Length: 381
Image 1 (cartoon, one colour):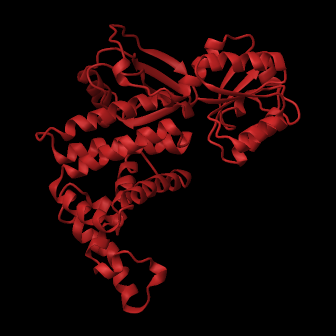
Image 2 (tube, helix red, strand yellow):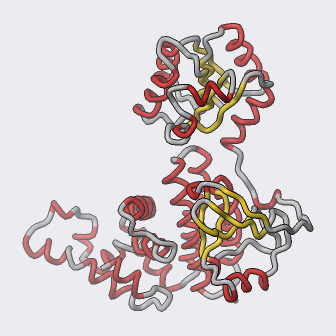
Image 3 (cartoon, one colour):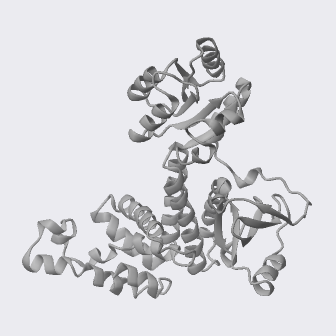
């Protein structure tokens, strides 16, 4: 990793640099905020380690510079004590808003620093989970924004829980019903759903990448199984894409997220390939516009961002919004070839009138595919 150490104590800063170089990182050192900004401007830094007592410019000025310039660097804050973090201009409650991914309190080892840095980029895998016989329901208090929810009937993680699973009791209060590594029994989930009225399950957002990784592998496996229905395959792909969009939207598109995003795109595409009628549509579409997949996926991301910010999106509607966004331009296949590659502002008269019919054409095409519901067609139209 390319790491920048911003530390006013030159001796300490250089020791961090030497330690990280020995760990295989590309490390640079800046003794003040001005030099730090200079390094950030001229080099692509992946992780910036900033001492809270930085001078010329201050730590907060360097962090604002990073965010203003939209530099995709992870930030680790160094401090003398927990109290110094509480008392500083950041305020502990604002660390997440500022994009600070970790806080280290002096003294700490170079191994600790190296572990935090590598933790940012480690691809979390459900395959690393070890089976455990432990079962204990436990109430906890935690902020709602620390959790990701999923409809209970759509939740699936195999025979072993790949993370702790919770139900929400009330605002900022949860009951842990499954421990990581515990055997998953469908009867228990059915009991919560049917007898206790539980509609959603929750897991820590920090573990969302584990679930994305698991679902991605699951989608790849079911795509190769002809006995699995097309609707089931679409449902898995919808859930996978929704979680990936949330991950990108809330945490940014770093190198690790980009790699997983590409895997998700491939899985979704493979799902569509497995539905013969859908494959025919997309094969024709891609033949005349080679960037369509990237455009459609970005449209899904933007649609999700808009819906969340306007308060429209729910667990029920999100998959439909994403799939609708993915299919929104499919009707262009029925346009005359001389209009397909045109932009709206390039057309006028009868050509524009014909071009604007592609929304209705899209619905007509999707009417031929039973797996696509009416809600999706409404979005396309």
